[in-house]
Image (tube, rainbow, N blue to C red):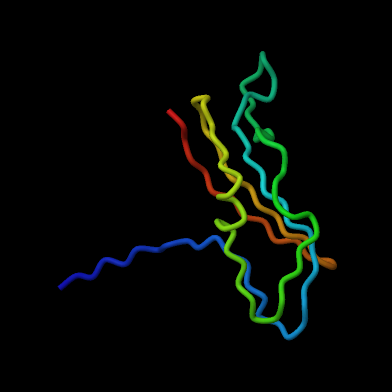
Length: 105
């Protein structure tokens, strides 16, 4: 019997510490576009303005589900292309970043 395990990524921030963490949460939609018209270089460019609370506190043992922060914005993309949701959370001397890529056809 062969088992198939599927890795399911979760969009969340967890404070495993014993004190509040105050930081800056940023969520962007970015589009993969040519960097220069003539050359074949590509880069991620901001497609949307950042959305999410600027100052953000996470209590000890609290789980912040990023879909609950992101989904109420009801972002719609009508242009075909390669995109990603980019998230960063900066606090004290630390910065956590993640992204999820998707395509609109």
